[in-house]
Amino acid sequence: MRFLRNGTLVAALLAFGAVGVHAQARPVEDGTQVTKKNTGAGTTAAEFLLFGAGARGMALGPAYSAMSRDVESLFYNPAALSLMPGAEVGFTVMPYFADTRYLWAGAALPIAGGEYGIGVSIANFGFSGAPVYTEEDQENASEQTYSVSQTVAGLSFAHSFIDRFSGGITLKLINDRLGNTSAFGAAVDIGTNYHAELAGRPISMAFVIQNLGTGLKHSGQGLDFNAFPESPDPSFPTQGLDPSPARFEAQESQIPVVFRFGVAYDVLSAASNRLTLGGEFMENYNNAPSFGFSSEFAWTPSDLPVSAALRGSYTYQPDNELSSQEAQDFAGATSVDNEGLDGLAIGGGLNFTLSDYVVKADYAWRHFGVLGSRNVFSVGIGWR
Image (tube, rainbow, N blue to C red; front, side):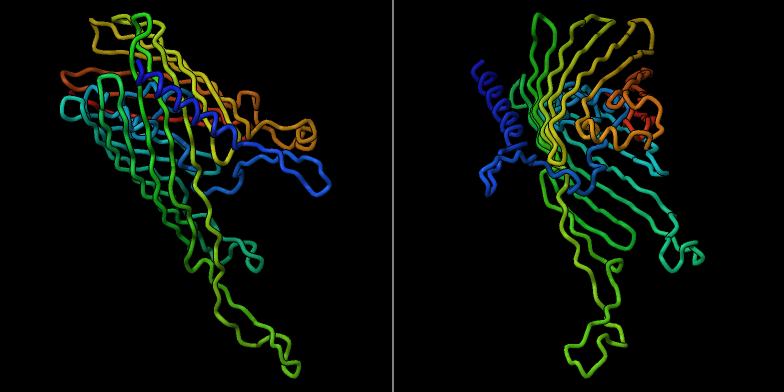
């Protein structure tokens, strides 16, 4: 119990500490106080690191860091890898906006009787074959194209320190290719999971830090250009006739660091039925703090090889909250139906048990406010 009290206190202090740096009063020369938001909005690269993994995880985004016990733990909380019932592989595809797509794949398994867990994952976001338009070639008569490919590969490890507490870490390598430029970086995810019982039913708490690492600084021939330096000698032309090769130096951009604190509780826990409710507080480096709630109902009949689940969640999205003036300025600028559903996600899944194998198929629908909604599909197979 002392461990639980101390762990909860540390998590609370870290969470509120993250909130504390979100805004501060800054004095100016005339003595007035100016409130400044200390977020890196618009300054981070590799935003795809926040997309998620698995249709189940994306439908249950809030609190899934505490709820996960499958291969999707590789993204949400590596501490849960040692809690998995067996080995599992999974694949996810999310067609994104503007003809882009997001792919995620992972494989994980518990070892040493669940004392440890290991896994690998890879994700990619991008597009290819986009036409290049320039001031000189506004119709793309040259038929030049460019591509974007952002990739992250991770190696995860988990350890159950005691029967109720586990910790995990994921080491990640990031490659960001934008046209003819590229950048490389490294990051780490650190997660914890405390699991016990409350009123005879399972409860879990998780604290996770994601994407703690280096920034991304692009380089490559896409930054090359021809410069015509001006001559300091007035007897020469003010601009040189022969170009000099030069290269722009890109500024380093941070990756989006995330702090998560989640709780999940089985309000119904029976042999064939389960109802789990959860909540999560999240602090993003590139955004204001957010929070959300999720629920999952699972039906697992003992006499059938098929089980099913229904899921839903809502996440408050501070980045899409407009002031009255902003709402007036942007009135009529978008034509997306049901913009008020921003942050809503629903989904479901089916599991087919075949001897020692379980085949999974999941679906999720996510709404992104003014951008619209997207569909997420994932499949997986697990074995004991």
